[in-house]
Image 1 (cartoon, rainbow, N blue to C red):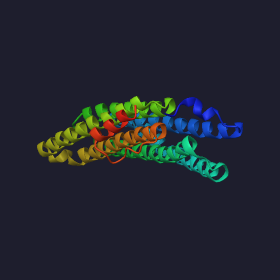
Image 2 (image 1 turned 45 degrees about the vertical axis):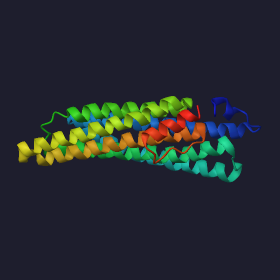
Image 3 (image 1 turned 30 degrees about the vertical axis):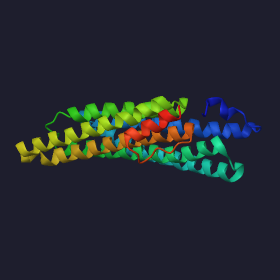
Image 4 (image 1 turned 90 degrees about the horizontal axis):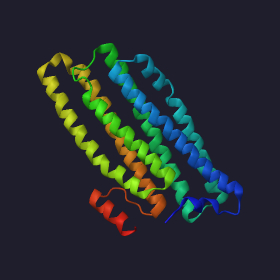
Length: 240
């Protein structure tokens, strides 16, 4: 099983620094998108177009971080030719980098829906589902990043498990919003905007779950993607 100290046993201190640098930059990028998701939800429910515009404008910062991390990973692969746990870390970093960047994209999409809702009319739902699902996916993302920082498989497993709950809440929320549209067709435009925001939140939950799965691969060397939850949990427990 991979442990934190395994990254501190190289002959080259420079190599140690490079690996630690990639990990720290991923966590910095993750913290930034976590903040953006929370801010985007707040902007939507509060009709704050100024905050929404700021989130949209700052999406390029996450894109720049993604490109920098990709370059660093490519450089390590070319120069260091890592093996075993070091290679898994670089592969995991590349995958996490993409998931984190896509979460940033989804946060920007929510912010764009916030602008539309503020300009075209607020939804009659009072955004109860958006508030609840938004808080849950932010928590999922935070826990997934913590699992990566601590190399904590148990925490990663809990994130993957919770994604199923978010999916169920998303389905329930969509059905509730359809009811609003049926009651008053004049609200259809606003509710559709809210639905798009909810879709982005559901996708953020999926990306947080992906991050957790990548942590399992990093620590255990086990690829658990595209499996049922039962099979995923069983395989992780078998290697405990």
